[in-house]
Image (cartoon, rainbow, N blue to C red):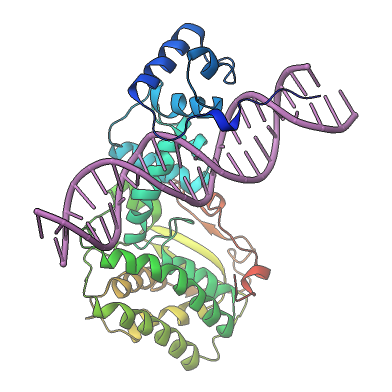
Length: 319
DNA sequence: AAGCCGCCCAACCGCAGTCTC
DNA sequence: CGAGACTGCGGTTGGGCGGCT
């Protein structure tokens, strides 16, 4: 036999808390603590579920909570930790005194996610989109790249176009120097918001990819590792040179005068990252099967990047 | 001025692990 | 030892509010 239920579902109030309810809960907890949430609403004279009381206390009434805006330092902490632990909001909040998991989650979903997307960074993996596409291209042959790109565009396009159509979005946003260093990114500093350019831009990307694939049919998976540098950071990536092929679309298909965010983002990131590519000898020291991004001052190493699809999954165009 | 739309965030929902009887 | 409540957590919702047309 188990415990009795925490509350009668029918007889509890729901929705916004009133100041009076807050006072009752706060003063009761100040006297008796938070030992038994099932008894708290009953003893405090509240028609609330214990769970509701617990949430109200932990997310709002606790005296040690901060209620103001998130500082730059807090935002940076969230972004860095999120890159390592993902959506473990309670873990992230534990590193931010006075912030709750709910606060962090809301701030991430409403602000930081969009900020990263607007900077050309995938908020799930914390990699630049061009970097992700390069990774994909190193794993797949052209037909699969095309399929996966189509799928990825479907997801990212919506988010990006949403940002583009918002007039209030500040596309001049730049990452702090530490963020940029940490993420090894190049940021689209100025973005066009011309609505007519949106669908056209997406179509250009698709076209560029298919052209690149068609023009370089011999650039198939070669099992060679390649090396690139991002800023002063050397990268050693197992895979193939067809990553380079796939991402030449940034320059070849668009030309440098296209001011669309897609183009600028993809061109600059892909160009900078892949422009320094050089193939290594198969027997070279760096072709040992380990993918590594060296950046001693950053948490954004390959080991800490959680999103790493197995190649089997990548072979499925629906992923 | 009014209606519409999108954003923000408090609150709820539901699941999983833990605890209690 | 098992049933079921408790707790913690991440995902989702919806109402209030402000900006835009």
